[in-house]
Length: 289
Ligand code: SAM
Image 1 (cartoon, rainbow, N blue to C red):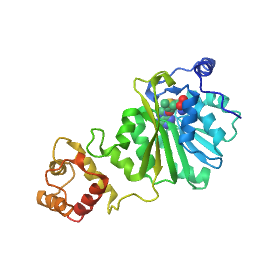
Image 2: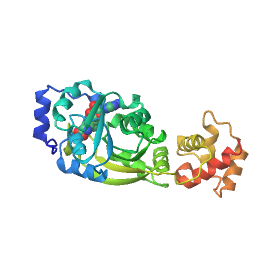
Image 3: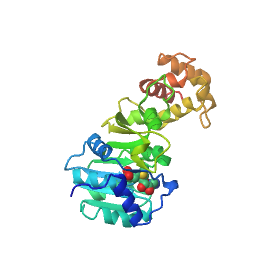
Image 4: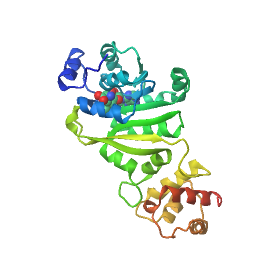
């Protein structure tokens, strides 16, 4: 079955049929542009043997496109009022399974094991913007068998994910994403492609998950603490950020010594350090705890 949703008229018709009322708290902005939908599926590099996890199918628009390209799609939707709609719009797509649940409460490792025998999956979503970062961090930090994550996010968040040192967008999110994945921008999407229209522009970004992180880190959790501490007070030096971070009890001379071992100046700010330097520094600090 070919996808037939993805227009303003078709979407309005479905919404009217079910008397659907948009819930702002769930970040509901539905796609109404078939070109963008095709672009997303292309960017996600879906092949006919792929298993796709879709987060937030809405009325099933992108789900139809994904189901036409993949072997199997599991779509997790929190809003119970969308379930009867999805049963209708996806009835001709037998390779789709809808689960009504909050994605942050789903045992993802268990789901991949049960539905795809633990084999690698692809994640595709037009994410609800109010929980973009927690969803991405769950997907990345759990080290699940995922080959890529292709998501529509707020343009500003996509910029934070892909930028490097010395830019105002660079921060803890950039480093977390770039430690686990290679980000590639796939499309810029204006508010007019959604109903209702969001206030901001959106970007489709593909994260290709690394088999192995690009840097060697002895204690990942500690490196991410060092990163958070360094960006906690952006205007202060990295040394002050580390000294003032609650829960850290690093002594100043030990921090300076670690910086020197890594060839990093003592007055540097966190925003100037690359992922490689954060890895080196956290390894050096870890030895001095
Ligand atoms: N995929 C649809 C589209 O592109 O037209 C809808 C995208 S809309 C931006 C986000 C969707 O995520 C909504 O359907 C919303 O109800 C759902 N959602 C919001 N929070 C969720 C959560 N915690 N778990 C699962 N789905 C969620």
